[in-house]
Amino acid sequence: MSKSSTIKRKFTSCLALLALGASGSVFAESDDPRYTMTVIRDAAQGASVARGDYQKAIAKITNRRVTPDPFAESTNLCVAYAKTGEIDKAAAACDTALAIVREANWQHRSGVLTGQGEKAQRRYLAMALSNRGVLYAIRGDESSAERNFDEALKLDQNNDVPRVNLERLEAGAPVSA
Image (cartoon, rainbow, N blue to C red; front, side, top):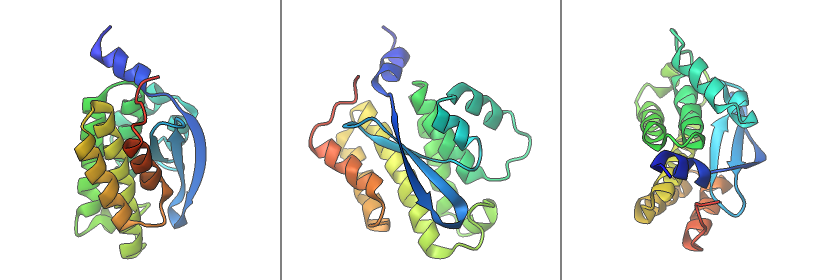
């Protein structure tokens, strides 16, 4: 079996809905008792990702000429690529999302983030770190996964996703089906 199909087989989902301020809804995908990844549902094909239309979301996001919300697009691509087993592309998308939200002018680069301030920036950064932590867990890099989940928790203590992911990692949650 190929590495791609093995990773794809390792990552399936059931769903849980979370809300996130003025940016609209954030959608966390979970594989209880496995790991949870989060998409921005009302932007950048997030609804398609939430429905499991990963290839459709990837095609529509990557074929856009104009990127109105680069953070949401990168975040949603991260999850869609992870779900299709394209872990290297997922990691690149997660790293892009992290770079965007860490920029000094992050509010102006993403319409969804404009005017939301430091609290929102910390929340989005925590979301991106938690998603990246899941990718590390899938790859078997537990120490990097733990660092990402810990950092996400420090940034947004009200976000249960990194907390649950960290608990699952510490409990030795499987990443295979």
